[in-house]
Length: 265
Image (cartoon, rainbow, N blue to C red):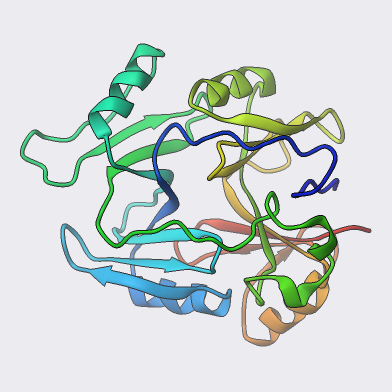
């Protein structure tokens, strides 16, 4: 897999985010404590927790923010925390975005939900005091010379957050949608199938026109991924090998998925 990161000649300036000031992945969890323990093995730590308006725990590995929300119904979304909600909603509606869920007038925390052409959930939530965007390097911001230096990774267990991966039916149509909501494609390829990486300066989306998998996945990369996977296995982490011992898929307690891939050959 070709890698693009800061200081690469192919790396354009990242855009200014359109959707909000902070981004996270929202994942519902039937058992919050079980999920927290799972992600702690993957290099995450707890930031905040509360029981209102529902039980939740916010976690981070220093680069990626995840909101675990207690709910038995399976759900994952790319979430933005927004300061000027009315402005952002109006701008999106003017671009033809259709919201499939809207807040009630009485809701203190406003939540809007829309979907990509391939049914990936994207939510806008009122920004809460104390929430901040992690500053650790992702695959797009890590200096090129540090990609093969595991001691520089903010997440020592999994490596570098690379992308929020999902499959698409038509790559070009999908890119048109993501560009409409503030994303710029960073790289685009035709082999081994049509795929692209897009970012809005906060989130990183991997768009994969393939039938080899049909679910979204949180993807990490590391030069020493084989060793990291062996350590996770020794700690009891279940996985399904996708391309040998250095490239695996892990299913989470919430029935979501993580890809752990080795950088380079």
